[in-house]
Length: 418
Image: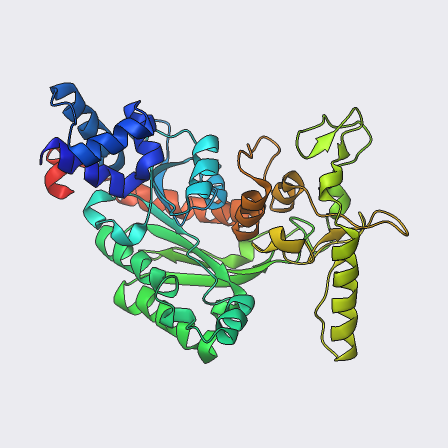
């Protein structure tokens, strides 16, 4: 494979932004290389291409890691956090959205790049691993997603070719790599979608076709965070283990409330531009909704209440818990509005508050626009829920690793694999 072919291959795998960064060239130089096929022929350039591919296919395994895992449909790395907390090392990441990639890469400066569209990745390019993690896209199965697609006359579930079939990419990777365990996450509605047929296809595939022992549970994050958020988690093990959901420790609904995640606005935390400002770190006025929008939301809610519907905004104080944060929060913030006092317009959550609402520490770097941040947190898992699942999976993962000690083979002829 010549240098042009190598460049095109890497471009398809990790995208222009990462590739130019890793090659230490400008976007203009990159485009010229592709357009004019003017890539320098020096062996050092070819060696750099080989090095980048090797970091994907054959990553360095750190001696301190207890097991390895891959992070599919990774978003901003919420599931990854839980499995790093129990001694795992991430050896492969896939996320197609470039803004989520940016947040992920900022917070996880790995030795391996973030691969893009997993549907275009040959399983030979995915390193061997002990655990597979995948929060595969939920829009085709969510109540809101199904409702929206129905209203537009579009397919949903497995009939949605762009998202619904991504489970089958999870299936093909499990079939090819045969990891010791996996954790899959999706919306609660996955179980009831299409009268249960969708979930039956998934469980049949995992159990009958792939031969895994699976355990699933719907978990509400309320108590870990002050948010009602029900998600289904499917745990799978390649061999018999004594995994038991009864070991899962839930703190109980209402254990934490909104005051635990809201900016105190009293000077007890440092201001964080552009979310808070001044000595008291008060929330920026940019997050207060306009009078026009507030009037619209109140009228919208009144109209639907008169029809007996529950549609409308959700307004909370520090003593409350809130509705599910969604990826559409950037549009008007209506599902979670913060009360500011009688006669005052409420405000949206800041992206930092959204991060806390999903269980992320304040050390998480938010380097994207508010719109993209809202989308990312609305699509994320609740981190402490995953931490607890990882905790009860840990002894069984380590048991299987101990039973099946395997050395990941070096792959010398990488471009033939690619």
